[in-house]
Amino acid sequence: MSDRTPEPDDLRALEARLEDMRRREAAKNRKPPPSPMGIAYRFATEMVTALVLGGAIGWGLDRAFGTRPVFLIVCFLLGAAAGIRNTVRTAMELNRAASRGTKPPPAADDDDEER
Image (tube, rainbow, N blue to C red):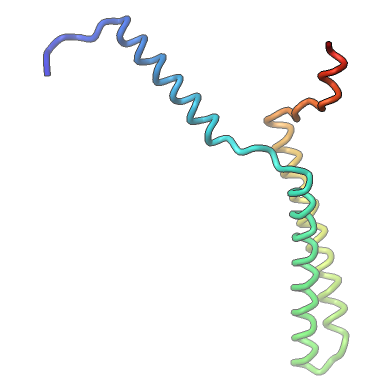
């Protein structure tokens, strides 16, 4: 190693290379926005999971206590409410992410009109 101090031009070039690498790394780690089909599957999964879980818990409680179908109906309705709540929460989260970040890509028809 030598005791020579780096030149300002060398430091600027190094800083520019580091900044370029940071930009490329950030672009690589950026997630694409969810597709409409992915959003629909997520909503459906939220609802179906809550309904099935609520129904299963109600069915199990009815079998344990011998009170058919009281707990099944009550827990199914609670599952429906939980599914709707989770779906609304997920929609709000997706809306916040969309408003914070990326703009949707332009439609293919828009390109023809500009020319």
